[in-house]
Image (cartoon, rainbow, N blue to C red):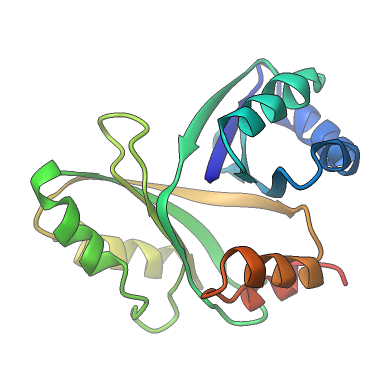
Length: 213
């Protein structure tokens, strides 16, 4: 299962971030094939948290990752979990370095969940916009659907949200976030091999510009 682990710190998250990056090879080695650290991100303005995207085999694997590994990292004070249900990932251009990344969280009227999901899962977007992933999330009452977009500018992103997302019947609330930092935890080659095995219908070539060979 795909889970976003929000890592919280009472201090600047940079210290816990740097420690996790430093220890990630050792942690992954100890986890074996039961859990995979995919990448780490930080939302702009959220100085005391970072988000770790992981693929874990089951609840026991998730517990082991958090209790026996992440909780031991200096500067980490707590966690919150966001499981992604029916996640869908999208192929994107090879080089995304000139694109900005954003996350959108929607509160949707429960009776409209199916309709909104069907409308937003379509990969066809206005020119310049690219969808990264899309999933149900039921973390709290204000979070029904979560997705990530790439856009050449904040203006283009905000225009799409205002003119398309906010006007969808059933969408009650839209929250948007800018992702200011991303750290992949596997090589481009390994990521493609991983994607072809675990997510055979998906293409991860868009991450090439962010990975080392």
